[in-house]
Length: 239
Image (tube, rainbow, N blue to C red; front, side, top):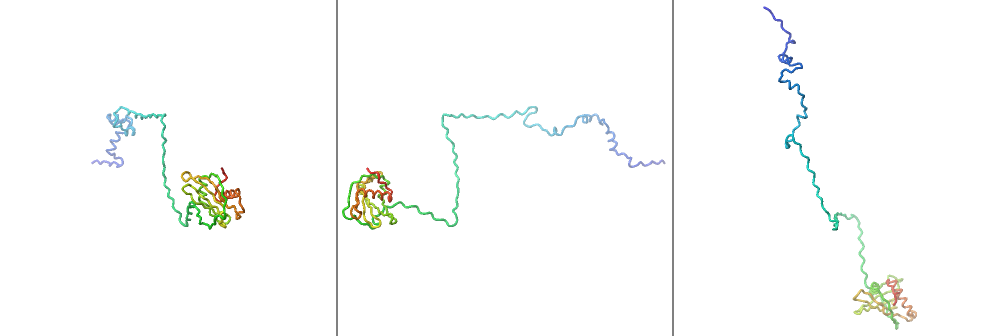
């Protein structure tokens, strides 16, 4: 009985290798598969590209239509109203904490001087009287009406007024501040219905021994000086 020499396991050829040997080589295994090997492989980008679903095949998408510009005609003959932008901003300021000084009270309006503010004396003897014609503006009439109270002995004068009555007659009295002696008196007629201007129509003064026999010119000069320094009234415009 003949014995077969066992073949080596390493030389045993698998069924899969037999078929794979036939497939090796430059020629394709079947003429039906020749086209698959001769055609160039497709690019992966072309395989992934898709045609747009909305547009039909073979037609290009038309470009977007240009935007229409609307022209507005402005009439240059009509004035254009400027546009204003109002900006309102609210700022809150907190009051300071601590000692806050109280603001000083508002000044009180000047009051009229009363005849009883200082003790006075009447004219001694027989005073002298003469006409005097001086126009006085409204502001100066008010100063004569208000009067003056001395703060110390250097002020020298105490001045107050009486009236006016229904006819607009006003009397302004001049007294020495340290003795109360009456030195002079002005007769004023003021406009009570208009702007308040007035006019000095006469002067009465003490021309006796107490004033060293004061003359008319001295009396007028003394009254002008007292009105200018104590009342701020200028009586130099004599008519």
